Length: 199
Image 1 (cartoon, rainbow, N blue to C red):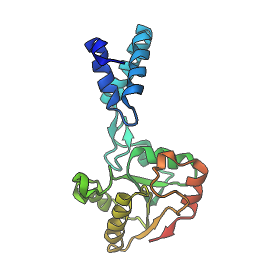
Image 2 (spheres, helix red, strand yellow; image 1 turned 45 degrees about the horizontal axis):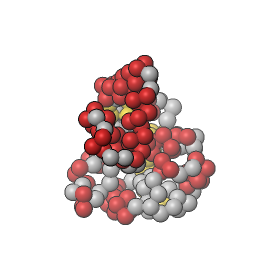
Image 3 (cartoon, rainbow, N blue to C red; image 1 turned 45 degrees about the vertical axis):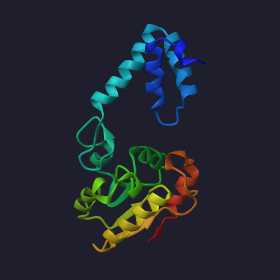
Image 4 (cartoon, rainbow, N blue to C red; image 1 turned 90 degrees about the vertical axis):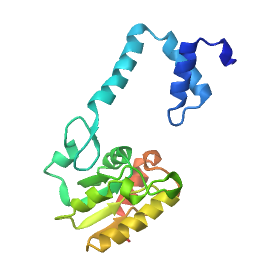
């Protein structure tokens, strides 16, 4: 499709949609035409949902999970095991781990992983806040993605936590190397959580 034939408003929508992760120009074009052909009501609902998520969603002051409150639902839940913290890269990983119904502790979202090539160091992540939460914590479970950056971050955190006398475990290796937690099925993730090991 020759983009010169498209009106500027459609071109702009295609450009914005193509910036979303996993969306190429072809898919962005299909989505743009879907939105164009949708009813005004449906298009307004989509626009409203996007505005609402940007206005209402914030990060938990304690663990950096997504929430509409200052403190997320998990951190407020007094029935959770407060002696365990599971460290993840992003809030999407919490959703996957919660679906297993295996873990009843708390979480801490780093907000990424150490990646020198991308200019991301330990100081750019929520590691300082994790250290501040360690009172009464006996175990920290590392549930980072099995990438080179995830491994480097795990090694860094293990040294940091063990120097403070904290037991550090990680998910078992049933999760394929290089995969993201959000794409791992619940059964595999559940078994990996049960079979976590000391590091």
